[in-house]
Image (cartoon, rainbow, N blue to C red; front, side, top):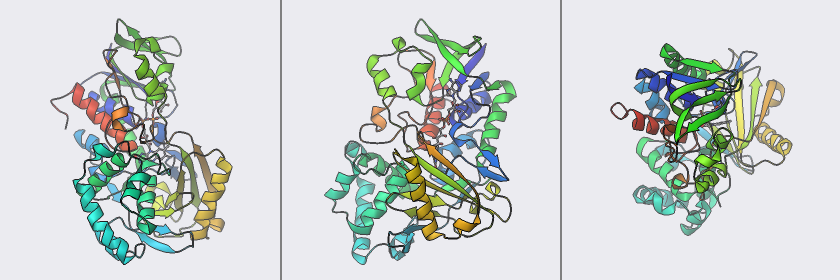
Length: 427
Ligand SMILES: Cc1cc2nc3c(=O)[nH]c(=O)nc-3n(C[C@H](O)[C@H](O)[C@H](O)COP(=O)(O)OP(=O)(O)OC[C@H]3O[C@@H](n4cnc5c(N)ncnc54)[C@H](O)[C@@H]3O)c2cc1C
């Protein structure tokens, strides 16, 4: 019998499995795909390492994922981004400030806008985000008379970190939480120097030291009896008994595996109706290097965020070649139109891409982050890591109530659950 059965071999299932295995727990992890990694899966093609879209670590070495690795004795080299740029609709290129001094030197803001920025940041620093959780960011900005490029800057930053271009739904409180953290630790976005494959491999190794990982194995049912989770039933009908079950996939899909009758009706509704973020991603695999830029590249209408990934994580492209990734967040009813728009934006700023593209990988993504952090789905309106009605059933993932945005919600859920299960060693 296993101590823990983990359903899902994405980064969060692997992370919690590794932490528990490191404490001597016997872990079995099931992943229905042939490969581990879920949404950070690494695909190799012609020497390029395609990371299933643009993947960055918010807060670099202060990222909760790095804390998890550190708990396991592993350091993560987070390669910091360089200067970021904003391309206006008129084709002008501005520094998109990500460091304190750039707020004063960028030509993106007028002198008047610069004079408004410092008091605004001070106010944010002192404000209580909880009061604004259900206020749309558009209303919050309007109340503060935010206009012009300063408003554009905040909107682009919010679209990018929240993977949602709709200011009428973004939770101002959640954005303020993020800005407060930026003020505390700096806007250090980074990419793991050795790519994501290395981190996944490390977690895998930890679990396999005393436990087991079964890929290509779908869990069909989480066995529940007398209000207690008993283990997992696999697609071939085999029952694997475990003292605890951790469901490590988007919570919206939980009820495909666990009968709704074991949960409160309102809870089921809350989980099922959580809206994820979505978008379209294009990897441009270039036969030659065309740029030395190492930061994010922002375009508007529609919002497109790009990065020359291989300028930061060199392992993602063969020598002499280059990987440029561009992502557009938001609903896309017509993915073909969005692909065309992304290409147009990228080519307007980097015309060489047209001739130098060896191949392109287009990904229309229904699920980017497990939850859109909007006014109806802020941290107080999402399920926690512990199941209240079924003993020994736990959750990790990026659709839960843990703090942060995007992937950080998932990593923080891992830290939260680990704290609950192993309070003496958790950070
Ligand atoms: C294009 C893109 C860009 C992103 N960019 C960023 C970024 O820059 N920064 C950031 O922080 N986050 C980013 N994210 C979000 C980040 O990828 C996710 O938060 C993270 O990967 C979620 O990991 P997870 O383990 O919780 O879930 P998943 O990766 O979804 O893993 C769940 C796993 O469970 C498996 N599974 C499901 N059901 C079963 C079953 N019944 N039996 C067995 N296995 C099952 C699935 O196959 C899957 O592998 C991005 C996501 C995408 C798609």
